[in-house]
Structure formats: C-alpha cells, structure tokens
Image (cartoon, rainbow over all chains, first blue to last red; front, side, top):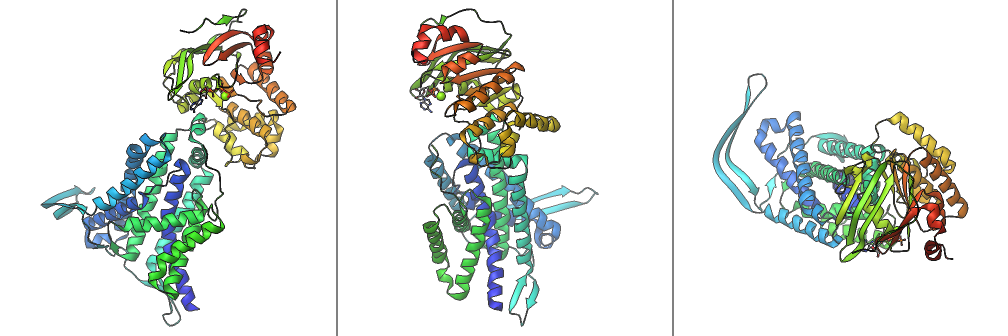
Length: 331
Length: 250
Ligand SMILES: Nc1ncnc2c1ncn2[C@@H]1O[C@H](COP(=O)(O)OP(=O)(O)OP(=O)(O)O)[C@@H](O)[C@H]1O
Ligand SMILES: [Mg+2]
C-alpha cells in the first residue's frame, strides 16, 4: 500500500513535468497545425542557460531564493527569445508552403540544436566583469573560461534546491521530497495560469480563433503573426521551466536530453489529443504514472517500450487521442 | 486589353468610399482577376454578380486584404490600402463576412461576437451593440452559450453578419449570405441588411441570387471571367435582357 502511494507521488511528479513540455507541443500545434519537433531541444537549451546562470551566480547565490528565481527567469526568458527567433526566421517564411516543409525544417532545427550543443566551443580567459549594485556595492564575476557550446559529455546540474525529505509516512516507507512538492506546485500553477489565459482572456480567444483559421482571424482585426509569435514564446518559456524542474530531479544534463524528454512529452500530447490543452495535461500525468509503475513493479528497461505501447493502445481505441476529436484534414 | 464595360443608366450620387482600379489577382499560374474596377459610395449598397468562378470572392478577398493584388489600386476614403493586410484594414472600417461564413465553431456564439469587436475599446458600447445584434437575430441570444459549430447553417450566417457588424464597419463585404438558406431566412437576412445599410453602412454584396441582390442594391456590377462586363443601377440591370438571360434563367 505505501509502495503504491510512493509510486503515485513519483509518477505525478514526473508527469507534471511532461505536462509542461506537452503543453508547448499542443499550443503550437493548436495555432499552426505544426508539430514543433525542435520543442524538446529548446527545452534543452533552456536547461543549459539555467546551468550557465547557476554557474555564474556561484555556489552560495544559486541556492538562495532570489538565485533560483534568477535562474528560472534567465532560462525562461532566453527560451522565449529563442522560440521567437525560430518561429520568425524558420517557420514563418514557410507558413503558406505545404505543411511537410515546416515539419522537416522543425526536425532540422532539432538536430542543429541537439548536435550543435555537442560541439566544444570555449574561450580561455580570464574574464572579469562587475555589475554595479544600487547602493554603492557591486557584483563581481570572474571566469577562467567562457563556454559557448558545452560539448557532449553529461554535466551534473547543481543542487539549486537542496533535497530535503519533507514528509515521511510509516517507517520511511513513503518519502515526499521538497523538490517534488515545489515542482508540482510550479507545474500546477503554470498550468492553471495557462488554462486561464486560453479560456478567459482576450489573448486566449484570439489564440483559439487563430487556431481554427488564421485567415478568418485576421478579418477580426487580430494580428495573427503577433499571436503566433507570442504562442511560441510562451510554449518555449514553459519548456524551459519544465526542463529546469527535470534537471533538478535528474541532475544529469546532456545535449540529447531534449530529444528524449521532448519525445516523451510529444507522446503525452498525442495520448491526450494533440491541440487540446487539458488533454496534454491528462496524457502527461497518465504517461508519468504508467512509466513509474513499470519501473516500480517490472523493470526500468521496460519503461520506454511500455510508454510507446500505451500510446499505440490509446490510438487504437481512440485515434484522436483521449480528448481529441478526429477531424478530416482541413484543406 | 479588356472589352469596354457596358453601362446602363445613371448612378445615384454618393460620396466615394471604396475605389478599386485595374485590380488583378493571380493564384500561381491562374489569373483570377484581369483588371477589375469598381466603386462603392458612402451609404451605398453595391451588388457584384457573376457565374461560378467569375472572380467575385477573389475581388472581396483582395479588397479586405486577405489576398495580395498582383496589380491595381485599392483606396478607402482616398487612402491607398492596396498593400495593407486584413487585420490592418479592420480599424479603418472594413468588415468581411467571408464565403462559407467563417465563424469559429470551436468558440461560443458570444465569443464569436466578442471577436467581431476585438479591436474596440468601448466595452460598454460593445455590450449595447451586441444586444442590438440579438434584437436583429433573437435566435442568437437563445444560443449565446452554445458552441458556434452547433448552430444551423442559417443561424451561422446570422452570426457571421452580427459579428461583422460588431466591428462598427463603414464598409461591409458579404460573400453569398443566402447560400444554402431557406427563403424565409434569406428574407430575414436581406431585410436586416437593408436596415443596416439605411443607417449609413456601405455594403458590397456578392450573390448567386442575382434577383435578390439587384433588388436590394443601389448599383450593381456583372463580373465575367475576371472582368467587369456590365454595370448599372440594380433595377436597370434587372431589366436588361442580357442579365435576365444569363443570371435570372429567362
Ligand atoms: N485558392 C485558389 N487557388 C487556385 N485557384 C483559385 C483559388 N481560388 C479561386 N481560384 C480560381 O480563381 C477563379 C475565381 O474564383 P472565385 O472564387 O473568385 O470565383 P467566384 O466568382 O467567387 O465563384 P463562386 O460563385 O463559385 O464562389 C476561379 O477560376 C477559381 O478556380
Ligand atoms: Mg465565391
């Protein structure tokens, strides 16, 4: 019984992280009918941005509350910019071309990022600079080396949230870690905020209109290009947040993590019904739970096979995903 | 290049609002419009009739900025709008209820109407105008919380018109509002159009049903394979033997 509870907790914790990434796939698919295969890699870039800013902050600052806020802000803001640039310069010129063209471009960007980041590009220093504080003091930084591209070897993500057991049931049978609670809270509040944004705001209404038909949406005076840009920025920022939560949990960071996590989140989005916001969340939670139970009760080597088996099963029973409707391709 | 336009009768004087000169539109290798010229005055209702594939929809799309013109000039109130995009024309008073209605089936009736007023900041006035729309089409009020995709064809057309009106347009472009509707519903919609037009909103109306359109409009143009071949006051066109033969099936 307590074992079951433990798996439930772990499954939900990883499921919420998948959910944040899956929401990005679903939102972009919603407005552009494009499966943005580079999404997971944008997440990976966000993790490295977070890694770099944690490094720049140093051991002390990276564990403080403001340090964690800075790390998340840099990663999410940086990814928003990256998402904006990818849409603006890679996808927008192809908007009126057949959909396959954009899809292949997305795969190309995915590989460019995940393999580009495996290159080793760095400059030997020393580099010193300081930022003047408001009350006379200053923040001084000193680096021996400036790393532009991190290289292929895995890196250990710093413990920006020192792991603490917050809640123990029975004789250490069920453990709830502080980072699990924090990541659950962050993920759930981001999802609630997103749900509010999509269904209760003027921007969300415009997004849903663009999602149905961007030409007709423009007839309402909606600046469709701006809505699409903002959607990319939002989904990329969410991915960066999710990536950091994943890195905190998993501690190992590699340039290929985006392909792996991205694929899982994509599977989650398809299980839920791609393009459907609550569907992405439910699909991700289910996937997180399924994986956790497989690892817990069978063997971890079975995890990915069962995850994809689950996908196939869902699609056999409900081809549009759990929440999706099967619609004929619009021409 | 093109044949001279046959003009029947005198046009009533209206201050100019929309002027289209030598408009050309192409889809890849297909030239859909070969130099269309037409005018719509302030407060005027103008009908554009023609056979399938004549280029009526393409004309409206170019005017509202959905399509880029490959040649020609479009001016609204004297200002060149040829290169403006659709969303930039809405704040200048353009509303286009497109072919096939173009409602958002994944949004509720009220949300569709709200999108019609997307750029308006006068929230209180928008609510009043929405009520006005509900008076025009009471069935929309009953269905306000329903997804627009669950409406009947006629109801969707009413929604499309009500939504277009909510942007407070000075020029309303309508593409086949009567398509697929029962005569009674068509009747309601045309009565409403005349009322709206009487309040000073100019209308450029595309219709298969030439009889209906020419009866309602002050002026009309006949389009044939991408060119205007005939123009004149609605009644004059209705009386012309060519129009009667080609478009009224006599
Ligand atoms: N997206 C498109 N791609 C290629 N050709 C097109 C496209 N849209 C229209 N055409 C062609 O342009 C010409 C004019 O089409 P348009 O839709 O403007 O005609 P229409 O007068 O509105 O016809 P209908 O009464 O059938 O609606 C037609 O020959 C049509 O086949
Ligand atoms: Mg047409």
